[in-house]
Image (spheres, rainbow, N blue to C red):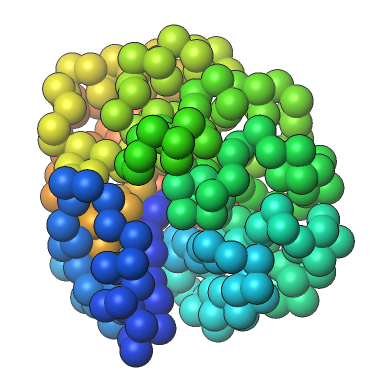
Length: 267
């Protein structure tokens, strides 16, 4: 049961504009950002379940994004909502609970706040183990925005909030993989595999070593659709030379366990 930890969708009428609103240098979308487009790519790649990650760049959009994410949820889609540091802890929690959202995406590049922001840490404290968190880590913007997330911040969050179900995108450091490997060695954090434009730009032996050093039971597959092709990213994982058990853990077993999803691959 393949589960994709990292996809983005928008309402059909704004998907094209949303994709163009936050361009990442050097990346060109492979999908259209619509729910229908995601479902078509899931069928082609045999993905059973996709996590749809909502992001509110501004606090005033938080509740609307959480409502949209909640409406997406069915047997093929798992919704990740959003929070913002310009809202109180209570306002953020109320929105998530009102819409039945049990997981959130943090994206410092677009939300313009750092992973060590005091309000965000208050939110994490309130989350406990109730909400899962997946966050962008690393580069993708200008120098200031790149400074808003780092492997060191992830390490500090994992140490401060041991009950938090924390997942770090891009192996914990997009475009700064050396730092991620050094800082997150032994850290109690789940790492996600997406690496736009494709994981194939990294040497397979390095990715294999990283997965085995961290433990396949703490790695989740993510495509970052629509910026990549899920089918190609799955093929990249399958071509790493991992054992069958390791591959199943990465492609769905680990995430099923983190999110309490019934799967024959969860252990």
